Amino acid sequence: MSCSVLGEDELGTGLIALPGVYRPQADTRFLAAALGDEDVGPRTEMLEIGTGTGALALHAAGRGARVTAVDVAWSAVVTARLNARRRRLPLRVLHGDFAACAARRRFDLVVANPPYVPSPRARPPSHGPERAWDAGPDGRTVIDRICSAAPALLRPGGVLLLVHSGMCGAPQTVDRLAGARLAAEVTATTSVPWGPVLRSRRAWLESRGLAAETDQWEELVIIRARRP
Image (cartoon, one colour):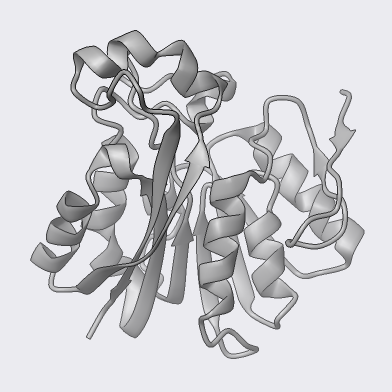
């Protein structure tokens, strides 16, 4: 089983990435910046949904948080465990669906960079690297599940940090979280150049009204929701 080593970035020293594991990109760094604004320390119990390489989980563990990281891909679980060992940081990494893995537990902080790219497929793939980004025709398959599960995952005063594309509808996410009785708002936005996945789907995205012919930049949003 081969692997590659990622270069240094804002999340720390190089990380191992096994084949097919989502590597830290602009959305990861954007979410890391939002995480940096939170009061994270030794008393913080954190859950990361879809950990990938473990970059965000290890970022929080380095600040003393007790972190549980979950991913549906075994390759990501192994990657995150290897990176935790390399950094000599305690990290609990579980394989499976986040709702099942975190059942009956509550956290001070839940962080998620879920699949959010709109896809022509009716259902998200069950395997392959596309599993890390494809999220159904509206890009909301996993986002909506997180919104529904958030109240049960958060302790009173707990915070959810979620990053996704503006194509998925930030107002819809805020409304769903508010409907779950969480205080939610968009706290940050940024724009990044279209990557190869969006470029390959331009005609389909335009046909769905999700993009214009001249679009070259994708808006990313950070949504913060707090349980009263």
